[in-house]
Length: 160
Image 1 (tube, helix red, strand yellow):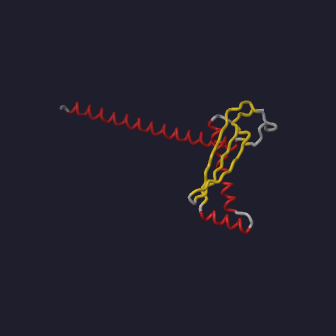
Image 2 (cartoon, rainbow, N blue to C red):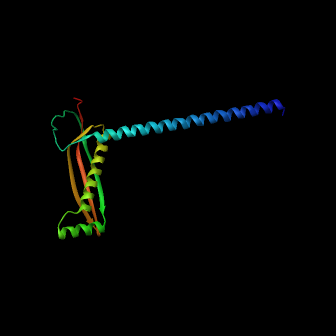
Image 3 (cartoon, one colour):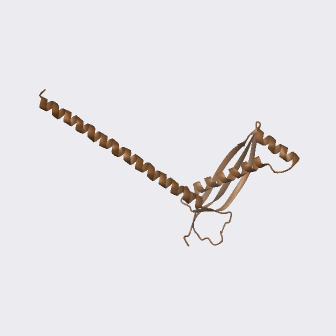
């Protein structure tokens, strides 16, 4: 094979490698840009959900409902371990408040309300009205679980 042909083949191979490197770099840049955009959108969504109004009122005073979307629900089940159960029983016997159990209830309530906001966000709501919380204890085979269910109506409030 003449030297000129070898040089042309080598130049072509180098050009293909260069083009492939450019393509890979562009794809990487696009992935990075998409990740940054996704992160910014996620942060915006979290701020939106955190500001979402939740109320137990069916007709919230001072707020105009422009659209009722649908019922939304969230459920959480938390396990109470034997140590927590034991200290709760001791507190029941001697009186006083059970900080461990109270913390579990608080955590369960906060979690289920956050999930209710998420469900409302997913259907395009900016508020949830008529929120109802229900607590249940599930027991069996020596295990004790706390179940918390939140329900409400996902709505859009007017921008008044």
